[in-house]
Length: 178
Image (cartoon, rainbow, N blue to C red):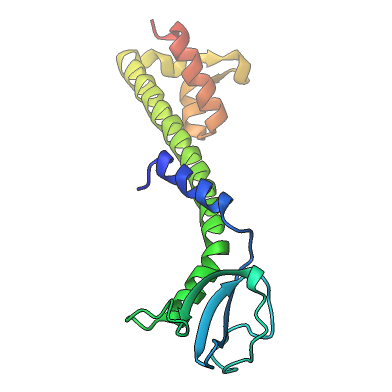
């Protein structure tokens, strides 16, 4: 799992990068060879693996990165996944912030679950105390509770009403069993 510092570093990098959205594009270079790049402007040169080459017309100020440029030979690595790299880079501009947002939501949800788990542990401890106290003092089962229509503790426990049982737990924790 990434540390808070590592996540913050990712947020800072994403915040400093050229604003999106970004698009993968395909055109020709100076010698009509393939050129793949990522741009901030959608154009008719957007790469979709169907259109083939488009003649020039690249807005140089919108280019974020180049994954294939054969002439002049600048980006032409051996892996030959220029299209895939351009698509990955272009989508990373939107994907990384979306993943960070999703991670924030999951962390909040996890905190809520941990809080609820803590409450459950506390309730279990209180129920254990209740049962132990009743086991030591069985006569508590016959005690009437005026705030609960003079029902006995036994009747309330049998009803299963969690709010009423909570009242019984509070009653016993405050010295009724001593």
